[in-house]
Image 1: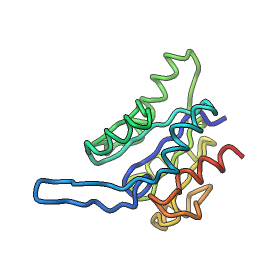
Image 2: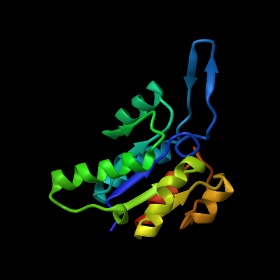
Image 3: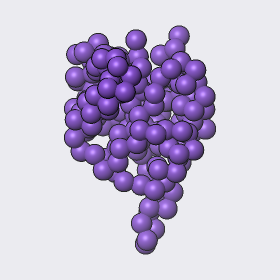
Image 4: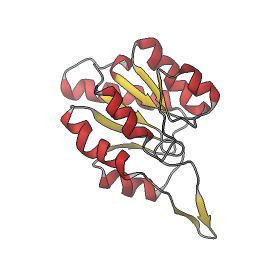
Length: 162
């Protein structure tokens, strides 16, 4: 049973474009349907949203706060170690043994493969947006019809709960 939905940000929750001005990152666009799925549908299904991203962004902090995502890890290049630590922390607090089998992972690029391969091998679920890189699409259990930042995460949430 899936207990955690672990997501990358750029290229998964956003279209992957980073709009920058002379003072740094200006804005990112997020899909409202993805947000509704994360904030309203996941809690009803007792699934915890987790964000693990290699970039750091105050915009992502704000969006996660808005969606009640308390498990936000930014600036992470060893995504697998972070994911395993999340599972250990929840295992201790819930007195339940959570493993990668309890994870649905949504990613779009090469850095996500470090989590996707072990999650898939453990019997978890591996998903990606339609515009993910080919190596990610090849390993995915589910490739969304929608592109990143255009409802792909919501589509994945809906498919998980069918």
